[in-house]
Image (cartoon, rainbow, N blue to C red; front, side, top):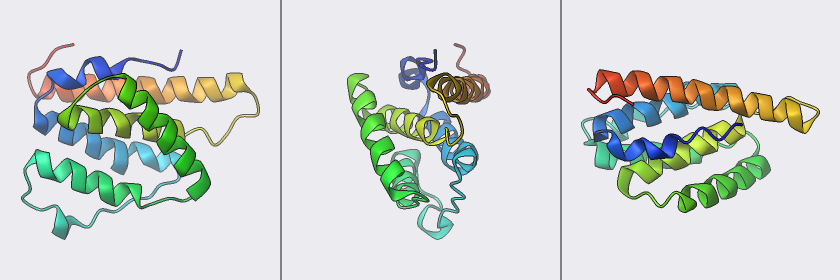
Length: 140
Protein backbone atom coordinates (compact mmCIF):
# COMPACT_ATOMS: atom_id res chain seq x y z
CA UNK A 1 0.00 0.00 0.00
CA UNK A 2 1.30 3.46 -0.89
CA UNK A 3 -0.02 5.05 2.29
CA UNK A 4 3.04 4.89 4.52
CA UNK A 5 1.84 7.05 7.40
CA UNK A 6 4.61 9.62 7.58
CA UNK A 7 2.22 12.14 9.11
CA UNK A 8 2.43 10.29 12.42
CA UNK A 9 6.12 11.17 12.68
CA UNK A 10 6.18 14.82 11.62
CA UNK A 11 5.06 16.20 15.02
CA UNK A 12 8.00 14.43 16.69
CA UNK A 13 10.60 16.18 14.54
CA UNK A 14 12.30 19.46 15.39
CA UNK A 15 11.72 22.32 12.98
CA UNK A 16 15.21 21.96 11.51
CA UNK A 17 14.45 18.35 10.55
CA UNK A 18 11.10 19.34 9.02
CA UNK A 19 12.94 21.99 7.01
CA UNK A 20 15.50 19.48 5.78
CA UNK A 21 12.83 16.94 4.80
CA UNK A 22 10.67 19.55 3.04
CA UNK A 23 13.71 20.80 1.16
CA UNK A 24 14.59 17.27 0.08
CA UNK A 25 11.03 16.70 -1.16
CA UNK A 26 10.92 19.84 -3.31
CA UNK A 27 14.54 19.89 -4.48
CA UNK A 28 15.33 16.22 -4.95
CA UNK A 29 12.29 13.97 -4.97
CA UNK A 30 10.22 16.33 -7.12
CA UNK A 31 12.70 15.81 -9.96
CA UNK A 32 11.13 12.38 -10.51
CA UNK A 33 7.91 14.23 -11.34
CA UNK A 34 9.65 16.53 -13.78
CA UNK A 35 9.84 19.50 -11.41
CA UNK A 36 13.27 21.01 -11.69
CA UNK A 37 12.80 23.61 -9.03
CA UNK A 38 15.48 26.13 -8.12
CA UNK A 39 14.45 28.31 -5.19
CA UNK A 40 15.25 31.99 -4.98
CA UNK A 41 17.77 31.70 -2.16
CA UNK A 42 17.91 35.48 -1.69
CA UNK A 43 14.38 35.29 -0.26
CA UNK A 44 15.22 32.32 1.98
CA UNK A 45 18.66 33.08 3.40
CA UNK A 46 18.90 33.30 7.19
CA UNK A 47 15.21 32.61 7.81
CA UNK A 48 14.21 30.41 10.74
CA UNK A 49 12.36 27.19 9.78
CA UNK A 50 9.00 28.72 10.72
CA UNK A 51 9.41 31.29 7.97
CA UNK A 52 11.70 29.36 5.62
CA UNK A 53 9.43 26.35 5.04
CA UNK A 54 6.30 28.31 4.03
CA UNK A 55 8.32 30.60 1.73
CA UNK A 56 10.08 27.61 0.11
CA UNK A 57 6.77 25.80 -0.40
CA UNK A 58 5.18 28.96 -1.81
CA UNK A 59 7.96 29.22 -4.40
CA UNK A 60 7.72 25.52 -5.20
CA UNK A 61 3.95 25.54 -5.66
CA UNK A 62 4.34 28.14 -8.41
CA UNK A 63 6.33 25.62 -10.51
CA UNK A 64 3.80 23.58 -12.45
CA UNK A 65 5.06 21.60 -15.42
CA UNK A 66 1.47 20.38 -15.96
CA UNK A 67 -0.94 22.91 -14.38
CA UNK A 68 -4.01 20.66 -14.60
CA UNK A 69 -2.28 17.70 -12.98
CA UNK A 70 -0.63 19.95 -10.37
CA UNK A 71 -4.00 21.45 -9.46
CA UNK A 72 -5.65 18.06 -9.08
CA UNK A 73 -2.73 16.67 -7.09
CA UNK A 74 -2.72 19.74 -4.81
CA UNK A 75 -6.42 19.23 -4.08
CA UNK A 76 -5.91 15.53 -3.30
CA UNK A 77 -2.84 16.18 -1.14
CA UNK A 78 -4.58 19.02 0.68
CA UNK A 79 -7.65 16.95 1.44
CA UNK A 80 -5.53 14.07 2.73
CA UNK A 81 -3.29 16.36 4.82
CA UNK A 82 -6.40 17.96 6.37
CA UNK A 83 -7.57 14.52 7.51
CA UNK A 84 -4.30 14.04 9.41
CA UNK A 85 -5.19 17.00 11.66
CA UNK A 86 -1.63 18.26 12.08
CA UNK A 87 -0.68 21.83 12.80
CA UNK A 88 2.18 24.23 12.22
CA UNK A 89 5.13 23.14 10.14
CA UNK A 90 4.12 19.46 10.46
CA UNK A 91 1.08 20.01 8.23
CA UNK A 92 3.22 21.83 5.66
CA UNK A 93 5.71 18.94 5.56
CA UNK A 94 2.82 16.48 5.32
CA UNK A 95 1.17 18.34 2.44
CA UNK A 96 4.45 18.68 0.52
CA UNK A 97 5.33 15.01 0.95
CA UNK A 98 1.88 13.97 -0.31
CA UNK A 99 1.91 16.49 -3.16
CA UNK A 100 5.32 15.38 -4.42
CA UNK A 101 4.49 11.70 -3.99
CA UNK A 102 1.29 12.03 -6.03
CA UNK A 103 2.99 14.10 -8.75
CA UNK A 104 5.54 11.37 -9.45
CA UNK A 105 3.50 8.69 -11.27
CA UNK A 106 3.71 9.79 -14.86
CA UNK A 107 4.22 6.25 -16.10
CA UNK A 108 1.96 3.26 -15.78
CA UNK A 109 -0.87 2.03 -17.87
CA UNK A 110 -2.72 0.25 -15.09
CA UNK A 111 -3.77 1.11 -11.53
CA UNK A 112 -1.36 -1.56 -10.31
CA UNK A 113 1.59 0.09 -12.06
CA UNK A 114 0.64 3.49 -10.67
CA UNK A 115 0.29 1.99 -7.18
CA UNK A 116 3.76 0.45 -7.47
CA UNK A 117 5.24 3.85 -8.34
CA UNK A 118 3.42 5.49 -5.41
CA UNK A 119 4.63 2.78 -3.04
CA UNK A 120 8.22 3.24 -4.16
CA UNK A 121 7.97 7.03 -3.72
CA UNK A 122 6.45 6.62 -0.25
CA UNK A 123 9.16 4.17 0.77
CA UNK A 124 11.83 6.58 -0.44
CA UNK A 125 10.24 9.36 1.63
CA UNK A 126 10.09 7.11 4.68
CA UNK A 127 13.76 6.17 4.37
CA UNK A 128 14.75 9.82 4.04
CA UNK A 129 12.58 10.83 7.01
CA UNK A 130 14.19 8.14 9.20
CA UNK A 131 17.66 9.29 8.07
CA UNK A 132 16.90 12.94 8.84
CA UNK A 133 15.25 12.03 12.15
CA UNK A 134 18.31 10.10 13.28
CA UNK A 135 20.53 13.02 12.34
CA UNK A 136 18.39 15.23 14.61
CA UNK A 137 18.29 12.71 17.46
CA UNK A 138 14.81 11.33 16.79
CA UNK A 139 14.31 7.58 16.47
CA UNK A 140 11.19 6.13 14.88
